[in-house]
Length: 74
Image (cartoon, rainbow, N blue to C red):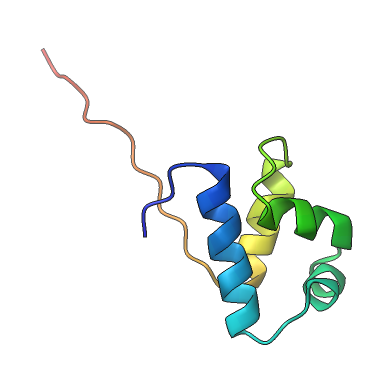
């Protein structure tokens, strides 16, 4: 799945959480992050903290791959 914005990421997190049969409160408690943060992350709030978002992603077992652009060697 290609994530192009915070809304896409939020939708992926929400869908994965629901498939894992976790409530927002359960995910928040297991990751040590506030429930409000989970709600905002799932809504695609653009100013969510990256470190916390990555922790939630890891807790849900979502794999993230980052690729750099090709390097133009001269």
